[in-house]
Length: 416
Ligand SMILES: [Zn+2]
Ligand SMILES: [Zn+2]
Image (cartoon, rainbow, N blue to C red):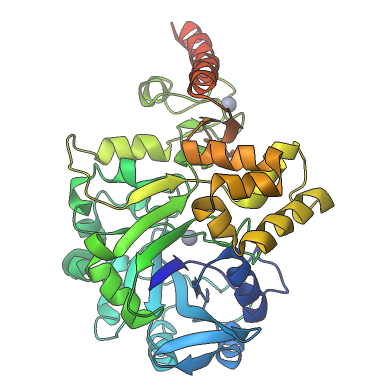
């Protein structure tokens, strides 16, 4: 069966999450989104674990929550942090394994209570996963290139991070500032599938599932996914997510005024912006450093998209994604077509145009790739510009490039 999966979420005890988060709401909005396998988030956290346990039913190896008589499948999942602020995703087949891992990691981290949804383990990655070597779990790095909190921010290779347990690494999550096309150039990742997940702290469909994966799986559960990741070359069909240029750490840029620098300029400037604040290395430059040229691309296609509510917001030039206008058009599309994912990926252009011509034009522009971006960096999100033809796209891109290199020229002048 075709499975649309978002495998990285957070519960209410992760900090910065909506307090009223529940499995009911995750399941309800997953269904509208079109996800049929959604991560529980924060499953090692006692309060949330109890909530999840009381909200799901086990059926044939799959956990589900009933939404109006239909099964919404839930994957038991958590994110953990190991020494050096490196984040990883763990997936579990059952509650017994969750309890085993709780009792092992509980010796090294606070698992329960507020702000401990993502436990901080006081051990390096290698030693943490050695402790879990006998547990039936799937794991891999979370948002692998993000500055501050990722494997490639702290280590130069997965081997350095995981040591002998590297062959147990089942996937690598790209994160919002990267896509498969860039990451594919890193030679050591050749045999590892890339996941796109939302890392959402809320159930709203412009957060949950803002990045997701399309698989062909025997079942929407742990065992099905394990096989899907093992035979990923056939079973992983698509990554869908933001264009990396939208990510807030895509380019090397100032932490404070967000001026974009090339790697060379940043080095010459001693990693200090002319405004005096530090320059932060971008994901795209980090990937470039780790890359070797001419890697063959045999992976699933990565489709650049944007949550439907954000496309509507752009089309209406609305400031608020929760405005009545944005939300009512979102409902109109989703109620007519069935799910947001079908609106974005699968519905015919004519059907979209018959619902609302203006919004449909924007969705179609995304599908055709007529979108250019002012790249993000230094902690500021990138900005998408939707155009309606190839010529318009090329012109807008030139304008953005000139703006960025104009700034770069000003920097050069000050340097010499
Ligand atoms: Zn994280
Ligand atoms: Zn600055």
